Amino acid sequence: MSEVRRPPRPAARRSPGDAPTASTAPTAPTASTDRPRSGSVATGTRPRSTGVPVTAETDELARAWRRDGERRRSTGTGATRTTETAPPSRGRRWGGLLRRRTTRGAEAAAEQLGNVTLRLQSRLKERAAAQRRLSALVWARRAGYVAIAGALAWVVLASPVLALDPEQVEVTGYGTVVDPEDVAKVVDAHEGDSLATLASSRVADELREVPGVRDAAVERVWPRGLLIELTSREPVAAVPSTDGGYDLLDSEATRVGRSDATPARLPVVTIPTGKGNERILESVLGVVNQLPARLRNRVQDISATTEDTVTFVLRDGPRVDWGSAEDSALKVSVLQVLLRSAQAKDATEIDVSAPTLPVIT
Image (cartoon, rainbow, N blue to C red):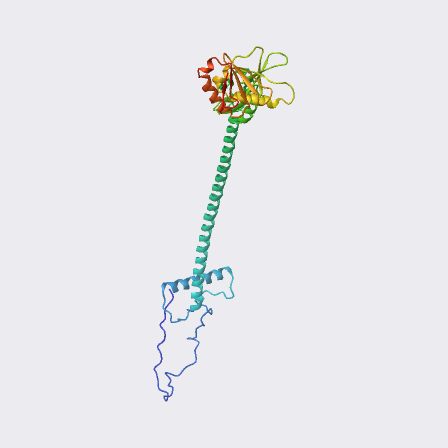
């Protein structure tokens, strides 16, 4: 440890008038008391005391300064090679300490920055892995949706789960003229079609083309059946055919069938043939349509030469002069009352062309 020298005592204060004495007058420095200035290097000398108290920190700085000087002497570096160098000044000591602290702070900051960089890289890797997992999950979900859609499309379009089975088709409303074989042909044409894509309106249009069918309603019965309700064209009159037999007509004058013999419970219509007589046929059929079913079944023959001269003959009954198709509802009521009367039992003709003034003969 370097020797600590006490600072010199201050000189005694004197008054301005006093002359300097030998003890107080400044003297020239001698060779024995001369010391190198702070920062200079002298061999075999001790550093001059600076009046700064010696602490462990300053002592450590001095030892470090000496070790640095010895290292320079051993390696031949430095401008001066001495066995002992003077300690640095106070400014240099505090500057070196500040530089070391700054260096240690920089090293700590660099170490901390390196740790932050490592953590950031780790976080980025984790984020990239999470993004890859999320992307894989999204694509897997999409693939699942596609697979489900494909399976549903196969079930709906190609699988036998929804295929139409003719054995599970129920048909009502054949009536008396609709041939069940004709309806079965229409249904069999769609056998195996998916019920989900089968257009019920298309099947109904095809059924309306069947002879004797006026209208058709088709309803799906899941998973493989149909419910078909037909409205048949029931014949209301028979017209003698030119090639023999009788053509059966419905209420709209549509031919719905044919009979070789005189049909039972259908009136036979006799009207002039040829062009221009369509209105006469419409008038006759209008009268037939207004008759109740029980009364219509009693009509044997019905004829007309004009639109206003419709007449018909009842089975086991009188001849009825109906006139035109006007006021048919009132004429029906009057005729039913007259037929139940005692006078109608022996009557040969009943005239209801003027329903308010009926005549029985």
